[in-house]
Length: 149
Image (cartoon, rainbow, N blue to C red):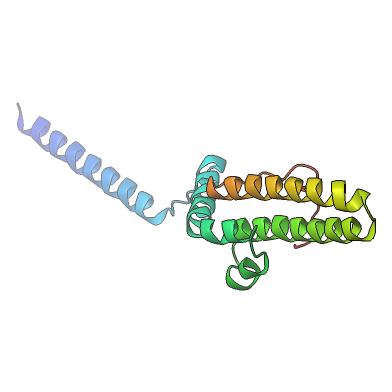
């Protein structure tokens, strides 16, 4: 290699180094903005919901036995509040069944009270099973009634 070729090669190397350095500074100055995809946001919400379900299963089960305990103890939990709403609705249906069953003589005592009590017991068991499994399934017949928001 001649002397001129060596100088030319060194100049090219220096030029390449300068370009690489300039490129790196541009990359450093350019802020990188990452936008979470819908799947990542959904996964984040799912993890929040899952932790809520795990933490408040007991309250949700208790909602079908004594509905007002989750209203006081787990106000921030959507899972517990959903089951508290179901429990309150079930309680009010029970009160109405017992009032109607005691007011109407004979038919109420022999049919409405026993059948209504069995129906309410079945609905309560279904709700407890749903709460224990971490599901928010509405109860049949009364599940679409929203009393607590």
